[in-house]
Length: 178
Image (tube, rainbow, N blue to C red; front, side, top):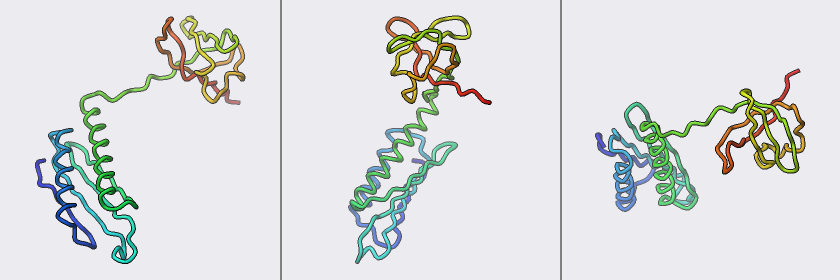
């Protein structure tokens, strides 16, 4: 980390053990990404925590080049659980950020359009705009709408490579606008 870790405790004194745990978990974030520029951890005690207990609030603000990652966690199970859950959440955000930086973010294919050309017991075939026929199974039709399909209906689908060639997944009926 380029800036030292900043730990703030509000409305109570943070024990040395909890501060050490926060420092250890913050240092471990460097294993996921070595260009973290700063980390601020704020722990807030619940109002009247001496008499009533209640959830501690752990807020982590992590700065990385071009972005700020923030999480806020509370836990009825105590401060240790809130710290663990907050660092787990910020780690997942950091992993997503790293994948995004590396260009490894999964992009979803755009759904193609076609029309139903044949329906059989539990499967059917679609015709694509370029004239190919693609198999689809009942389980690929969204919202259990296989029984609503009719030959000639327009559908959206995502084409995937199946065991025996191309097949359609996430088949959805295209609603006609009146």
